[in-house]
Image 1 (tube, helix red, strand yellow):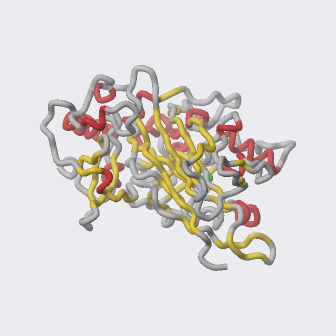
Image 2 (tube, protein in one colour):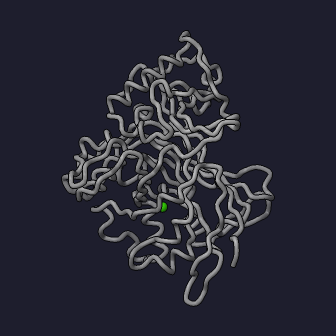
Image 3 (cartoon, rainbow, N blue to C red):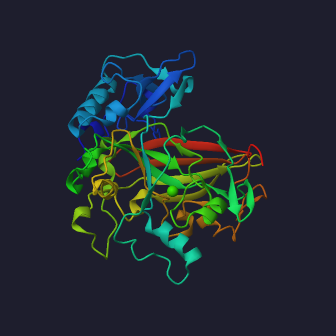
Length: 400
Ligand code: CA
């Protein structure tokens, strides 16, 4: 439930946090790991307006794994403490300008799992390959996921090399079908002991916070390798995430009803808990485009499975989640064409190229293209909060 930290009348002594449309008002207070240009040490901070409040006096550490390990009650207490320290009238403290800081990965990510929780994405992709039977019969029963690669997760702003790989029988070379996937990621909270499932009623206690995530995907490599064990080198060359962890507590006002299920899920996946209404957008900038163009907009509310269902399912066999593990939602698509969260869907496997204002067309990403994901939450009676951005530029393949 929203509390006084979400109250719209609460304002900060940091003036830039009070500007309408600001991503980081006092009602947000996302956490991140940063360093300033002239310092090697890593610090934890909270974003406020255009600044960062260092938070070592309340939460010492160099990664947010210490935050993820807190209980839900401790997370709420820290939020209240930070909110009080930044409220107008409180004593002013040392701040770091975000423009002077480099943002790093929020957590040391031990494990990374990518779900497939958008029924619109699953149906679109299925339709391309199985027009008569787009949605596989297990989809409405079991949340589908694969284990991804943690070592190649990079923070926003890191450039991504076009991958080399097998493109078919006897063919090795640079992927010609490089794509992005618009996703929401979330970090595991305290986690569970090996062998002990997490009840769905407690699953949200095990979600520390959210980020934007781009699951870069090489469709030609994927097509050749994905059967029978699923994606491997088509996806593990890079995954970009936004650096600010938007806490579960910041999203309280933006809880919403989960998507309706005509097929009731099994008991351990019920009740579904909350969906979250996060508005998401994808922008593309090419070297010839003066400014970025928006490729799609959608909402996280459309997902078939909720974050709580993903957590409960992940731990249902006793698999242990550890503080700071990253779980991604899968491509977030919606019912309309403008809601499609990747180029595979937007160009329908490249058959319907996008036409850009520069006169260029795009089936898939070209070298030099920059993909930016953004997200925000807005609701009448509450202050808008933003996710910042998740950005990456495609670099040419290193060799052929
Ligand atoms: Ca994905």
